[in-house]
Amino acid sequence: MNDWPDGWNGDRADRGGERYGRGSGSAQPESARAMPHVQRRAVPRQQSQGYDAGYDPQPPNSDYNTGQVYGSPAGRGEGGPPSVPPQGSYNNGGGYPPAHAPDWRRRIKITALSLVVVFLTVSIGTYFWADSKLKREVDLAKVIERPEAGDGTNYLIVGSDSREGMSDEEKKNLHTGSAEGKRTDSMMILHDGSNGPTLVSLPRDSNVVIPSFRGSESGKMFPNQGRETKLNAAYAEDGPELLVRTVEFNTGLRIDHYVEIGFAGFANIVDAIGGVELDIPKAFKDKKSGADFKAGKQTLDGEQSLAYVRTRYAFAGSDLDRTKNQQKFLAALASQTATPGTIINPFKLYPTMSAGLDTLIVDKDMSLWSLSQMFFAMKGVTGGDGTSMNIPISGSKGGNLVWDKAKVKQLVEQLNNDEKVTVTSN
Image 1 (cartoon, rainbow, N blue to C red):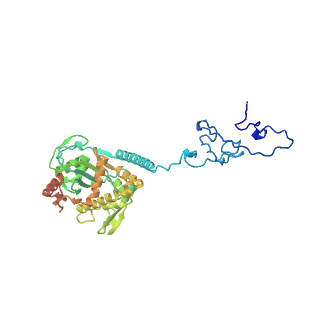
Image 2: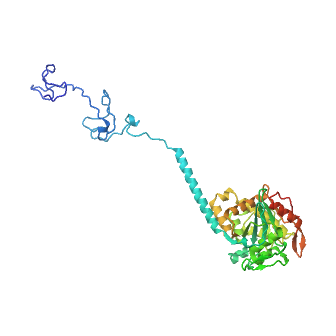
C-alpha cells in the first residue's frame, strides 16, 4: 500500500528510481530539489478553531502573502504576537462588525424627556411647598347676607400694620411703632375680568355703616344699629370676616377671595427681588413713616418701600393721595417681580415666594393658582386695559370720607357685568 501523496511514487521510472524522503544510497549528498506545490485545503468556518476562527481561507494562487509561517498558529509569526485583524466588512474577512455612528436623534429625545421629567418634578414640588405655606385663616362662610356673584373674580387685598414676628430693632428701623394688635393700613378691591383688571382703593377713613354680622369667634349675631364709622374700624372690631361683610354691604359687590399681608412680609418681598424702581415726581418727607425721598427715578429697598406706601401726612389730600401711591407702588412691585429674571431664577424665586408666603393670610378657598392669577392681574393694572382708581368720593362727614353713592352703584354694576369701567374718581 502506497502511503505517499498522489504523484509521489519513488519507484516510477520518470523519477529515475529516486525515492523522495527516504535518503539515497549514493555517497554524495543529494542536491536541492524543488518541492512540488501542495494546495492547502479550505477549512469550513464552523470547524475552524483558534484565533483565526471565522476567517475565510486564502484563495488559490495567493502565494500565502499573509505573514504566516508554516508551523505557526494563524495570524502569528515565529513567536510573535497575534496580528491585528484587518479592518473592513465583517463578511469580507474584517473580523469585527462595522462601527455605527451615534444615534443623535435618539440621544436628543432621551435628553429632552429627562429635562421634562426634571422640570415637572421641580414644578410639582414647588407648588406643594408653596401651597403648604399659605395661611388659610379667613372663613368667608361666616359672612352672612352676601350679594350675588357677578362675572369675573373680586379680591379684597389688605395691608395690615401687623408687627407679628418683628424684633424691636426691626420695628424701629421700619418706623412701625409698637402698637398691639393689628389694623388695616390699606384696602383695595382688585377685579380680574375679561375687560382687563381694575384696582379700586378704599380709603381707610371711608365713612361706612357697620351692618348686622355674626361674630367670627363667638358665632353671636349682632344686629344692624345704623352705626357709621371708619372702614378700618370693622377690621379692628371683628377681623377679616367683618371687614368683608362691611365692604359687601356698602358696595353691593361680592368678594370672592381675601388676601392680607403684614409690614414684615411686604418689606421682605421688596428686599428679596433686589428693590423696586420707582419714579417719584415730587420730593417729600414724613417723620412718622420715615419717608425722605428726592424727586426722580430711584430704587427703593424694603424699608424705604414701606415708608413710601405708609406716608399720609406729607400730602395735602391725606389718605386719598396715599392710596394713589400704594396703587402705583404695588403695580410696580408686581411688574418687576413677574419677570423671567425672577421666575426662572431659583435664587430669586424661592426667597421672594418664601418672604411673601410666610406672612400672607388668605381665605380657606384660596388656591395657589388663584393667588398667582391675582398677582398677574395686579401686574396688568398699569398696562394694556388695566385701570386703577379710588372709589368715588362726594365729600366728608366728621373727618371721614363719604362715598358718592350714585357713582359707586354704577361702578359696581360695570364690575359685576364685567364691562369696561367708565366711572372715574373725583
